[in-house]
Length: 257
Image (cartoon, rainbow, N blue to C red; front, side, top):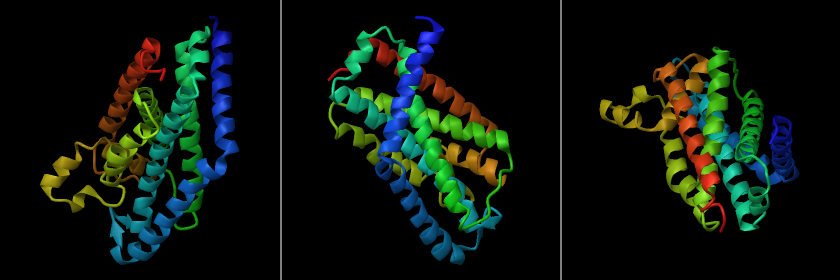
């Protein structure tokens, strides 16, 4: 298949995903924005005024980068896992698999849909956050790299989850029992300086700690961990997850129900 045909296939899948997200925007875009707005009000305004400062900035300003990153993670993941599993459930994925469309084009099409939704939610939540506090960008490259790398990584995670899932219940197991606990314990609401040395070391095992802190460093210039190690880890994990996802798609044994 020529590069032009690969591009047409990729663009078709991407446009299908974008149109689906925009068509059902009350389900895909609105709920996370309402949820994050409630976090801003409850944790930022009501509780944050009593906490004072954290990491050298007001508590409201401290939690905003973490909440934006939380929305990007959950929406990138959920978009791909639900969309690809729906394609499996309706057997429409088989039409793609038997066509001469490149597996890379299929994979990148679905992943790009997850990235689009994650970034769209991230931008909307950032705009809402401006009503509550001042936001700037201290390090543009770190901010852009972390946002893109994280949305790619969790879109790939959602794809892998969708390949292994056999029912709609299966696609909620990882978000409920793995993703949500790791996100809430990933330094969104607190600095690791507030933890004892034992829990600081335990927290370093949580990969979301590095993503939240890298993004916070890009926005506020403050991080609990080495940002360059975090960015390197995001790149390595993206490479590993892409390789796994591509092999699963090429193998095809679990892609069909």
